[in-house]
Length: 485
Ligand code: PNW
Image (tube, rainbow, N blue to C red; front, side):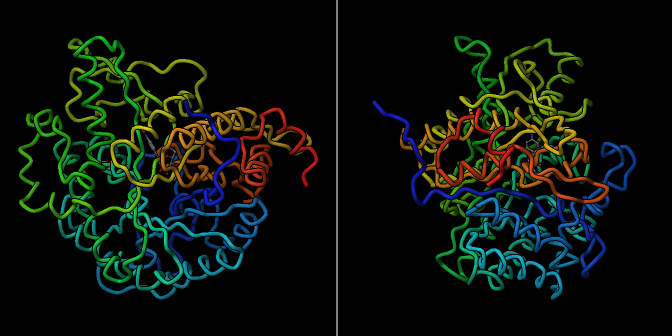
């Protein structure tokens, strides 16, 4: 019999997360080179509203006040990413001193406020020059990434302990090269599988390179998770469908680092799409054991079933259910007979469901399957936020979402899962990739004309969570926001 504790452990880290391309702007300043997202955004029809990260939240110019705001919120940690093309414009060769100085400033200011930096090396903004040479399809990019990672450890390793190599390789590979809904916009199942493998190899080589600089860096890999449950648990075919999605979404991005193997179903289930000749002798050995912790990004849950008659309509549903544009290409190689059931219940602006119990189950699963420390590196939701006449953003839906999900983390900890931190997605509204600025995930509202930041009710509520280190009741949000401390 386990009971859920009342408060979070003393060493549990509460914070918030962002990513470089989503907040920085300054796309052509400070010597930054172009990235695949600059190119993708400039391609008509790829991003809602033709939006781009050219200005975004203008964090490039406002980072000092943004960090002051983090301190006011009471964040203990801040997860952000380094834009590779800002520190190494072409992805190979010369590093850019101005870009390195920008992140040096951020890290120093965070530390001066007692905020622990958690640095992600790759949150999807690949230098365009590398894409011109094949991007993640090429092993040249894998090796370039390790060189970049080593240099970042040399520059910042004395001040930053917590590092994540890649953010969500599933999205980078299967949405970027499979569904074509993210940069670089390829739509090819075989390519997507090759890229997924190369990303895993890139993590392993970066891990080793950084450990050579400082052996006690804590280096993790951040995975988004899908929680595919079989529609009919008594159906073997539905269970196999769920296993296939679990292999692509989750286990292929942690098993190699834990057991040195890919999940058993992965190669047979995709053999009709690729011969896997990109998986070379020694690759899995290189990956084995090369991780200190896993990041879990959780948003929503999924139910899948086997459906041999799946037609165009359900393919559309499958992609829509994951928030992607309806289109011919799915981000799930080998899903010819797998159908994602439409989400039910209250849906967020992304069309995603709200399911804290699946989050709890996933934390337990990752704990059991990997035995590694876990950090929740992203969790949050997009809603149709409105500024009221009195200037408040009463984002009660977001408070409820956080309440349920932070509660799920505490429950998992009570049951023995080694969860050591929680980063809310996101610190502020920002560029939501293919959805442009239309979807708002922030606890802080951003006015994209004035670039003014305004705390939503959820920010005041989260501030109180951090103060009490407990799951503050939803009902208190209104009073907390009405009379800020
Ligand atoms: C994550 N899916 O992206 C990213 O890490 C963030 O940059 C992003 O803003 C956030 O989640 C909200 O979308 C995802 O299709 C994109 O399952 C797509 C999926 C999951 C996460």
